[in-house]
Amino acid sequence: MGALSRNDWRRGALRILVASITAVLMLAGLTAAGHTDPKPTAARLRKELAALRKQSDLMIVEYSRERVELQKAEKAEKTAVDDLRRAERDFGRATEEIRALAVERYRAGAQGTMSVLMSGVDPSTVLSRMALTEQFMSEQDAKLRDFTTVRDTHRQARVTAGERTAELRASLERLNTQKRRTERLIAKIKDRIDLLYPTPGLRRADGTWVPQLPSGPDNITPRTRLVRQLITQRFTMRFGIGCYRANGGIAGGGEHPLGRACDFMLSQGGGMPSEAATSQGNEIAAWAIKNAQRLGIMYIIFRQRIWHSRGGSWRMMSDRGGITANHYDHVHISMY
Image (cartoon, rainbow, N blue to C red):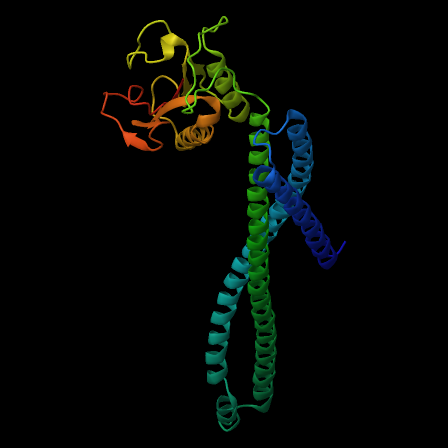
């Protein structure tokens, strides 16, 4: 398949894909905004999830294809750049040879030949010298032709490298666009999954929740268990989750002895988490804030800041003297 037909196929596939995604997202938006029931049934949510998963699968396939195209473009660009470098080196050497050639031609020009003829030298010697001059001129002409070839190769290498770079940038943009669309769709799928789980317990008129007793072998409340489950499903917790503990611990315990809090760890051994882990911590905190009212989340602590459901904004906390005590290595979530 030629480059043109492949590009046409890709554009057509992307147009169909974008149209499908737009339709599904509009449907999802209309469902969220226009449905009279603020709590859709599980059957309705599962139906939406099935449609979203189908579109997500299509996008992931296209995303993989774009990655392959990107790898091809990167390889082609590297080859073109290498060719350009070689052509530039050859061009530089040929340029120096041409400069030397110009000087030699000037020195061995017609004036030098006439001076030999007029000097009374034996004619056979003159003819021999003229033959050598002719050979020299022939060699010079060959060098000129070689220079022209090198020059043209150099120009073509620059054009090819530019084209490969443009293709690479286009592939990168397509890949990033596809990745963003896929991430948005997957996030929407995860939100729908969250809604499939009803929050246990009773809610007061002011929006707060009636406290629950801990239960089960993990000694935490049903609402705490649900939040832990949803975060585990949405995020990969490499360093574990700590919920119930009998004693006060580092920060006085808070809701931990009551089974109403969990620490979602981002590093090991009290070390400062990596940039990626900190980013995940921000995502966990943002998810908790987004779902606080629905799930009965009372407050969140992360990076020496606290967010309370009654205030609705972050505020700084006093320095407690360490990475763990200041909640830099974990996100703390407390429940009503």
